[in-house]
Length: 415
Image (cartoon, rainbow, N blue to C red; front, side, top):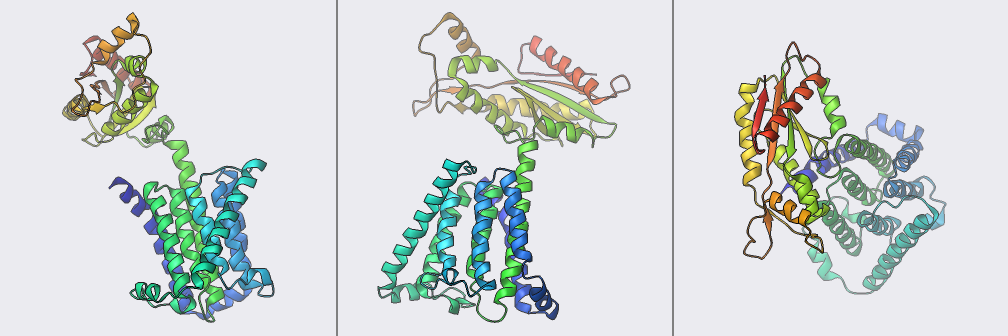
């Protein structure tokens, strides 16, 4: 469900933008027609800029997409170039197969071996779809025509039933990838696939629709790169919650009344020593996911290591104590099942002590062991004696130390 929400959040705005550009092109407004004739090279320039920016940010797939999207548009601008005028199968279908392959691939960069590998892979994808098209085109496809008869007939006259079926099949394969990993990058790449059939739009508006659609895709690419780069800078890669840099940025928006909470996973080193760093990473992700669910208007950040920071703007300690207690209990009562234990080969004395601190629970019915995770919390508010954020954080750190001395798994507040 969470992945579907991310997919809708990231893909729907781009699809709406693409749909609006299509409606504008279909309107054939005189100003658009004039712009189409005078600025026919603008989409190619926009794609080149998007590709260069993607390359700068190591988005090799997006750079290759930009390069390939130039081909069908160039076929519209220069119809005398014969090798761009493929009819069976159309150039856009071959490019879509290449792009679907890239969506399932990963960013490899443009080192010579990786570039050659990418070229070989997309060439193979084009060869496969070409072979499939040639084989199926010799077969009676009445069943396929009946199967796609329910689709809207708008513009389908430009495509044969086989082309329509292959387009739909490739889009479904790409959609599966986007649903599994709905990143900004994948959503931008998927939306660009919807452009390719549009470049075969029949009639006088073909060039205009191509211009608006490619400009829209260039904008979507740029937005995708910017959003991914923002996430890399302000999101913690392991846990997915805002990072320390985002915390420092957020601090600048705080007023004169707020509470800072420092939280620490109890005996975290014991988890790593007993179960391995893979389980330690699972613990961090678990705690981070619970921290983000804190109530009372708190905002959680990963400060570093096993420490987290929660900011309650416009709050006093008495107003947030119950929310912290609820969060503490939520974490302590959560049953974490160890999926990939990495236990030491020999049980040393230190390992045995660590295991006792980690507090393993009995094994579940499936035979997997679960562990108890607890956190300690220290809170402090901004005051006249601690007016700067770092001073408030230091007081929260001291309160956290009080919680550790009190036996851990508790909340302490410094006035």
